[in-house]
Image (tube, rainbow, N blue to C red; front, side, top):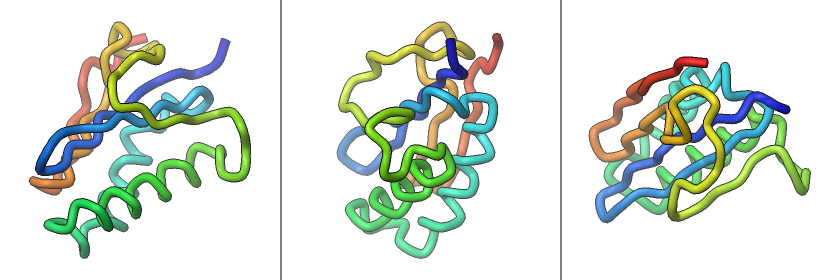
Length: 104
């Protein structure tokens, strides 16, 4: 049970993946908000990634919690919207958010 989804966060030398257990339906909007906050640091992968992750953790309701969201280097968490592939691509190189699949 839950509302599980993943976002791939692209940076210049690879990707990492954000997983939310409860706010999958809102992940596109959450990634757009994260991009807005990170935009001033696009081109600086370390800071842009930190800002984006901080925003995603906050908007998923997982801050200061042991559960509810996670970060991984390979996409191995459930995604109810896109067949267990990331539903959203948050590209911190190009400054874009792309919705993938989003079927449920």
